[in-house]
Image (cartoon, rainbow, N blue to C red):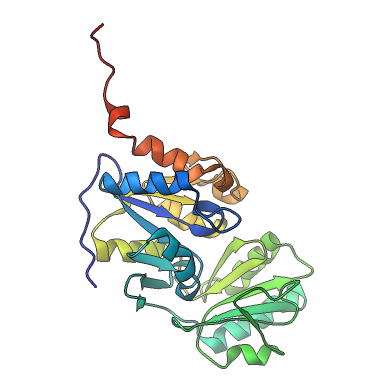
Amino acid sequence: MTFPPYSRPARFAVVATDLDGTLLRGDLSVSPRTRTALVRATALGARHLVVTGRPAAGCRSLLEPLGYRGLAVCGQGAQLYDVGADRLLSSATLDRSTVRELVERIAESAGPLELGVVTAGLSGEFLVTPGFGERVRHGWRLVEGHTDLWTRPVEKVLIRSRRLDDDALAALAHRVCAGRIAVTHSGEGMVELLPAGVSKATGLAAAARRLGFSAADTVAFGDMPNDIPMLEWAAHGVAMGNAHAALRRHADEIAPTNEEDGVAVVLERLFPPAHAARPASTHP
């Protein structure tokens, strides 16, 4: 499928949004106000581009209710996904021997780790060890031992420690993995190991090359440290009011929270209704 470039509106041609904690409310819905703001931005010439840590296989059920049919950046930037055609245009996987070695080295300092992996492709699964979460969530598949995680190609690995909090675990993983694989922190209990060089910025830049836009055309919204590269890449980076402190330091603007329609609040200013943009009449 070919995606034609959109004509550039007054300021931004692309609205890049994270999903969880940003566009989505806690119940995984998109509010009517936010839907209206996105429709208006699109009508004024902008393109809405989802940029999410979720793998493509985990995005379909969330994007369908939005009527989202275009390109999405998934898997923290590792995948370009044609939503309308339900087809992966590109993807990256981890070298399993390398990531297993690095997980063992992280565990030497962090203590025993609980692991989850996302297997490759549109049929990918989220496999977790028994202690990964308090309960097995919908879409997770429990495996008995660590060796069962590595039987298929893997797109990312998630690590959890009972000894270290997320920020400390992410910092340790950065030190251990530096230069070999990428590390990011995408949510509570979600410290992720990714193919080297993968980030939301690299995924967004790949989408830009395919669709014909640039960083200067882009406003980006996020809430967690995994969104830092995306906000730094975009011309204007917006952190949600519920954002992690590390992301807030890299933002050009702080919006209200995802539960308070923060994306809509900013878009209503950037893409106002036509009547709101007209100067007031000077006639009595």
